[in-house]
Amino acid sequence: MDVSFTVNGAPRALQLDDARVTLLDALRQHLDLTGTKKGCDHGQCGACTVIVNGRRINSCLTLAVMHDGDEITTIEGIGTPGDLTPLQQAFIKHDGFQCGYCTPGQIMSATAMLDEIRDGMPSQLSEDLGPPRLTRDEVRERMSGNLCRCSCYPNIVDAICEVAE
Ligand code: FES
Image 1 (cartoon, helix red, strand yellow):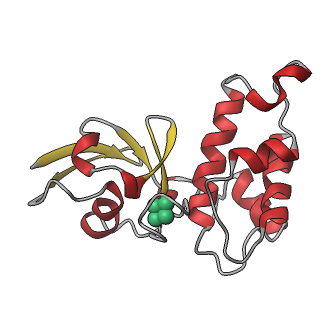
Image 2 (cartoon, protein in one colour):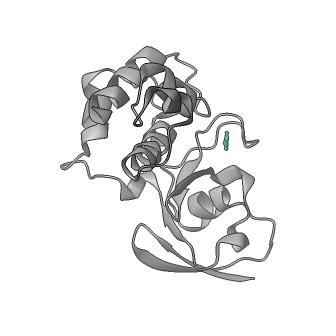
């Protein structure tokens, strides 16, 4: 099956023998974009998070052929080693990782989540408090799909809150 999409701003076309190839495996095995990690492969850990058409998804839970025409951003499309995004810099500043395996997924998820906030998506958890305002509890809730086996959660929240302010 043929599938074409845009990955990190570049058009990419794949011929897949098996329609059951997940987007995660297509990125890692067919496009050599190995920054997106496979943890559980069952939608539990968030290590495979990518952004599709502006929304974060677990790429292990979706088939590549379902994304024909979509715009996909992976961690390779977020910052560069010499020009990290403010969020990536904040993760370093606040030690938002130890082993680093979950970090690409954390960065992708937080990047999309911050974009949701900036785009004015209603903040469900604080709507009683007036205009959307990102509290630490909200960050924890909105990032609850991304697990960190090293348990760096307080540092990850610190990093995200610094950029959100
Ligand atoms: Fe996709 Fe864990 S590898 S959620």
